Image 1 (cartoon, rainbow, N blue to C red):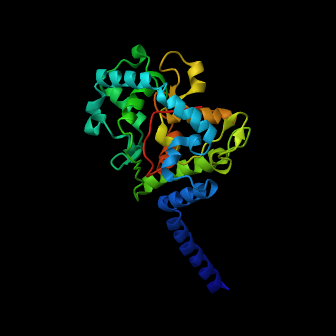
Image 2 (image 1 turned 90 degrees about the horizontal axis):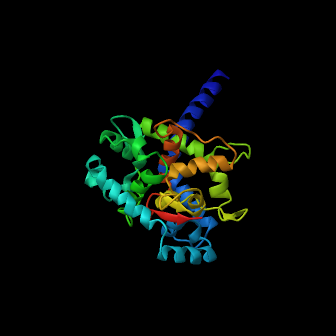
Image 3 (image 1 turned 120 degrees about the horizontal axis):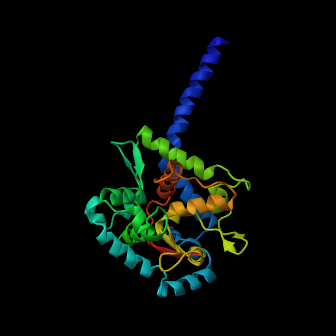
Length: 288
């Protein structure tokens, strides 16, 4: 009996190790794509960069009309001016041009994941920009405009997020993965409930978008945000602004971190972005 118990424990340990290896980011990515290819047969991988407009013909016609005179264009122009005025380029590789596709990335020296917006805010502070005077905050306005301009210079480049085989990187990745699939709020919904299992379904007058390809078009210009904001920058927002909005919609409290990005949202963005690897950047986008 004792030998049998030892054998069972040994098998469990070996099996657990095998399962850990199998549950790799690469395997997650393969299964994630396969799910959407089965749910929306005939939709090519690159089309997922277009969100709901890849799966709904009528909405696509409306979207294509908006793209003829995109409402985000003035914001991109403002972002370019601010990018140059604040000397943002000196903080980044290649002068900050055409680098969006490599974010988020894991920094082996610090053991942390960097988002584009996180590095952008660090750059503004390093360059001595008076954030209060310039009215610059995470998520929207001038800040989102600079990020939108940087993303615009990466249009056509394929998202290439790397999750190295480093326990620290995998811990952050798995934290983001857990957040994506975990239920929260009074409605008890997860990110996956809306953007995987119910993708393509209607919620009131809104069509739920597929999670695959989500991050490629952020920052986005949303018509909903436009009504709340003022001027060309009013409708613009980053992916983490959207995360907070999603939390509110399921009646969960948005995560806030004073003066920085919340590590939970950073982890979510790391996982979320990796799931869209290989899809071309087309930011900024215009969405409902």
